[in-house]
Length: 146
Image (cartoon, rainbow, N blue to C red):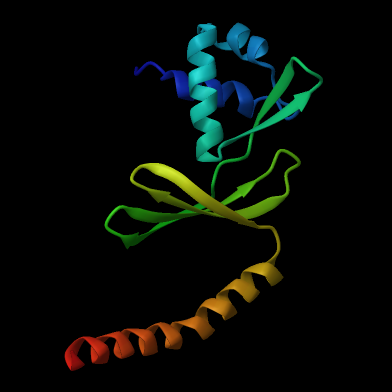
């Protein structure tokens, strides 16, 4: 049987606790070293899988955002990819995360938490699509006239 990776151990400990865990609680539950837990928590936060909440000056509680029920990737250009996930926040409210990763670094994200916002975004993109074609044609004409 395959041994769980550190990231799997951390996610499993967070899955079983709706209220979140401190780093020390994760260390106690997984047996991992503090540096290992911190490194992987930072990565999970960057990926949008874990939410970090600060309580006071020295206490942070970490909770799993939820397992994405739907994930798609859209190649935008050579090194740019959009990731689209449906997840839940620590309060079990669903949201859609659209994240841009460029050269293996996250460079931005938007969060949509209701169907109306999704419909508006789709409408705006549909309206912008013909403009994109017009600009492309205009640039091609300018290039051939020089």
